[in-house]
Length: 395
Ligand code: AMP
Ligand code: MG
Image 1 (cartoon, rainbow, N blue to C red):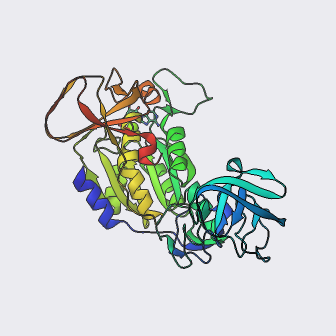
Image 2: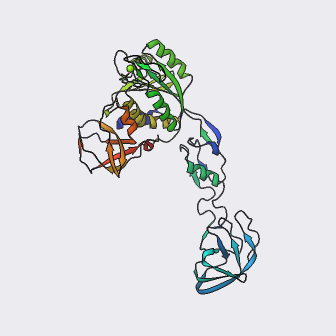
Image 3: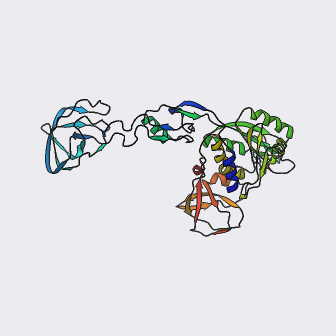
């Protein structure tokens, strides 16, 4: 599995152009350029609390400072200076006017006879924020390859960035294959099953931040599949198929990719998952996922998510998991990575009762996967195992 990931990482690169996008529309977009701050945050020294501002700290003991008539609300221009020995009413976020470098909390003073009365000490600079203490002009605040988060949009906006140069969203086509499949809403004959992979994969691709394009379903017919792939190659940046990816008679996806001459059938040592057919169709990468829904989902999360990130111009990022005590016990053999459908309850990670790769109910039950290493392993209840929530895959 690690070798497969290294191969993907080294062979794939960005396939989408850059364009200008307003920050308000840039959530989940991938930056095409580094961004430096055009303005400091905060732009001027300001107060972190509602209170009274004056110059310098005060020592132990009782103090009283007469108030000036003006107020400083947030947003006001700090253009009138506060004479030495006086204080000004000032509200959270307001810039400190000249003559103020210290603010006392309103709760800590008594206002009487147009003066504030309080007991020291208070340090010079108390309750104030320095200009640029968060971000200085010219600071690097976001790098090319970063997928923008809601917090990034706050940071960009705070320093006055309203537009970014971002990659256009990656268009990912989703195609189901198989004679046995019928579409939800249609009547299913005996022996037929409903297409479960396509809505799942459409959802996963959207969650990963890409544009999912529904390419429908094709029967196990090589010519029909060929025509559909030809059409799809002109429509999307990358194609995900499910089913027909092994080396059997009805496995037309792998047969066609082979015919096109740019195909690697990977028998990856993971459970569930193998095989994964990777190829190029008219210059577009094709991921031939296994038909089993559990395997299709695991392969999409483990291999598809980082591969799509590369194609979308984003940084490679492995899944973010963490160690959690097991609420189960299990013995596994050496020689393959195993992923178990799992969820956390009461601070321990439990796994689905069946490991069958056809069990869609277990996927729906789960909230992530437990990853067990390639080596042989015995897990006892309470042992730490690696849990990766769906969000740890970016989905
Ligand atoms: P295949 O990879 O085509 O050999 O399919 C493996 C298994 O996955 C078979 O049991 C298929 O019926 C099932 N399968 C394939 N495609 C889908 C799909 N879109 N939805 C649900 N099950 C599927
Ligand atoms: Mg099939």
